[in-house]
Image (tube, rainbow, N blue to C red; front, top):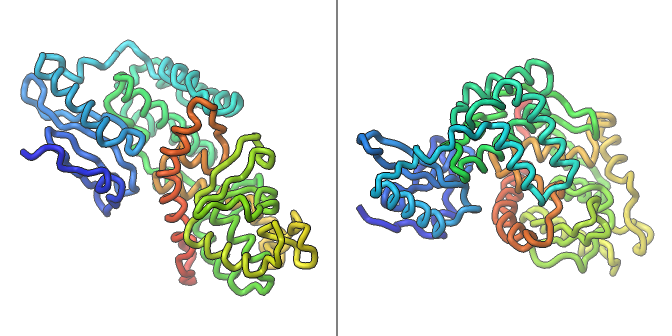
Length: 389
C-alpha cells in the first residue's frame, strides 16, 4: 500500500461531506473528517489476536501531518515489539483526576475561567463519572449526565459542560488515558434544547436571517454597517467604536491591549464581507482616524448607543443587542463543531501567556480564519420567509 500519500495542502483544504470522510496516508494512518468539519488523526491497526482496532492521535491542525506520521511510526514500532496501544491505557486514572490535571495546566486562560470550568465539571459530571476510568466513559454515559442538565433547563450551560469535558477527553487521548473523545460524538444542536440568553439579549439562530433581511431595509448606512461589522467580527461595542484605520493590516485587525477587556491585544481575522464593509467606510471616512466616525464630527466615534438604537428602531428592543452577536456566533460555532479553543480566542475570552502566544496565534488563526468566513457566509444566506435559520 502506498505511504505518505497526503500533503499539508490536502489536509488543510479538505472539506466535510454529508457523511464522515477518511483521507488515508498509509500504514493505517488517516485523517478523519466529521460531517461538521472537525478533523482528527486516527490509526487503524490489528491487535495481537488479529482484531481490528482504532487509535486516535489528536486533532488537526494542532497535530500536523508530520507529527501524526511520527506518532503512527512510534505506535507501529511498539506494536511490532509486542506493546499494544490499548495496553497503554492507564485504567487507574479516573476522569476527575484527568479533569484536575488538564485544567490545572491551562495557563492560557484566566483563573476565573479555569475555576468556572472545573466547578461546572465537578458539579455536573463528577458525581457519577468522576470515579470512572476516563477511557471507560462512553458517549451514552456522558449523554445521560448532560441530558439531566438539559431536562433541568440548563440549555446554555449544558453546551459549555460538553465543550469543557471535550477538552479534557482530547487531552486524555494525548496522555494515553483514553482512546476516543465521547463528547465529540455528541451534536449539541440535535441533542439539547434551546433558550434565549437573558444577559445581553440575543436572537435564536433561526431568527437571525429575518433580522439580517430587515436590516437591509434600514436607511442609516453608518449604523447598519456598524451592526453588520459587529456580527462579522464578534467584537464588543467599544472595540468596534474605537477601531482605527492604522490597526488594519490586510485581512487582519489588531486591537491593542489598552482597548481590550482582558488587557491583551487581540487579532481579528476579517472575512470577505467584513473587508467589503471597510471599503464602504473608507469611502465615507473624510480623513478620520476612526473607521466608524460620528457623522458630524470626524474626530469622534459613533455613540455607544448607535447600534442599540438601530436595533430598537427595527422593532427588536429587548430581544437583541449589539453584544448579542457574540452569544449567537458562539452558539453557531459550537454547534457547527469548530474547535472550542479557537472559538474562545475569537471571543477574546482566553488571554494568551507570553510563552504560548506565538504558537497560539499562528495555529489558532489557521482555524479561526476559515471559521469566520464560514460564519459570514452563513449570515449572508437569503431569508426565505420561513422560521428556519
